[in-house]
Amino acid sequence: MSEVLASLFRDNTMWLGIWETIYLTVLSTALAYVIGLPLGILLRTTARDGLTPVTWLNKLLGIIVNIFRSIPFIILMVAFLPVAKVIVGKTYGPAAMVVMLVIAAAPYIARMVESSLKEVDAGVVEAARSMGASTFQIIWKVYLPEAKPSLLVGAVISMVTVLGYSAMASTINGGGLGQIAIFYGYNNFQDDVIWMCVFFTVIIVQIIQEGGMFLVTHTDKRVRVKGRRKRAKEQ
Image (cartoon, rainbow, N blue to C red; front, side, top):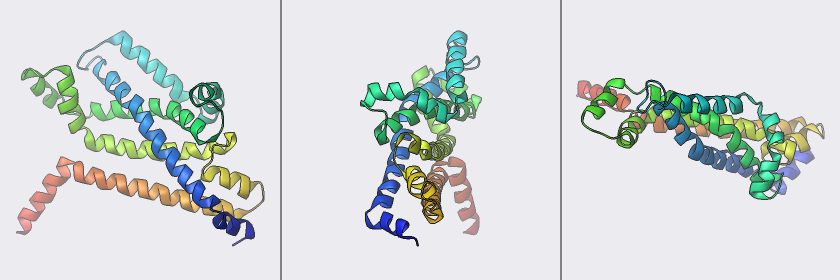
């Protein structure tokens, strides 16, 4: 272990970088879902085969989402620095980076949500309609519960994607493991620092992945039914 890497642990810089990476990832994903989830629901319900088809609105939203999704994150991050300045009062640091990550992740999440809702069996939706359920009731009591496993998988993928985006925070002094890898590792020719940041990033991704898959397994009705059938056969 080099002296540089040892000093990063001694003065808690590495631990702070880990915390900032987790903070950026979790907070940004949560805020992005506040925008992306309703947007994804709107994209699905206003589609031609949706609950309340509104073709012009669906196409407009689709164009906006596709525009933001097509912009490389590094370019989007620089372009929206003035927006971060207005919202958080500065163009650097974790707070500014959260703004960028939310702007980048929300359209991506919207498409993930739309895709998950498309997987809901049309027969279940029609059955709810025939019983007089309103659009809001179908969304809340049919779409979201039925699509829950797929939505959780999408949340895991989105969180890992946001984690990858957060590594670019170093370009605007956004903090996190990415900044440590660039500033203390790459700029000072310390390969062990870079690989230590890679190691901790992989650990965080694995925790997200395993935790997310655990939730998916325990919320998927199909998995629970198979489990009960298996236990019944064993008995």
